[in-house]
Length: 235
Figure 1 (tube, rainbow, N blue to C red):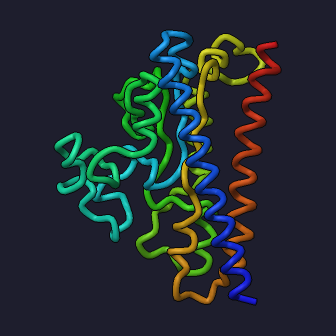
Figure 2: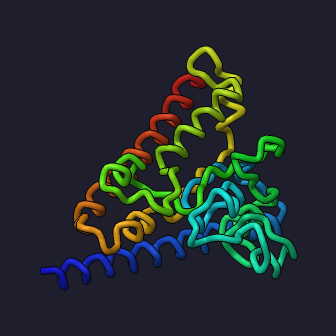
């Protein structure tokens, strides 16, 4: 039974990866073609990104990230492109950086950088972030070396950002239009840390699977509701 479950999980991960690559490749090709021909060179004017270390462009530092990722604020991180650490979990750029570049947009600033220009979008992703809320890991005594931020935290940050932009509902049509118009919402990889943090524990993998799917589904529904609300108030 475990073998069958593992096989199904592997096939699902492969399908998701292939689909993501196909969508991303098609998107980048389209953006590149548009830029070359000069027709609609900017299909999006801002990006809102969510996820974990595969997307995080600086919301964690050596002192705030998981200890297993220590030294992200030091070399060799960042040495091949930026030539200095940028708190990205890479020696160069991340996929989200290439997406921004293909759209002729600046690299996304992390939400926690209070001084950054966020007119072209914000990155809410946090390295070590989980799909399941942090309280679950606390309850199961799995808090050691775990980033307390989850996907739900990132949604809260997004709502705070919208509020700071003046987008607060039906009475703030202009502000909401400015926040959502021509915006790409990027949800990067999320969920791997949930499994990693429970390795060696008594928490079943099936529990993580069910809770993670429920959390991610709820997140996507919340984002969709926000977009639909924006469409409604701007109609």
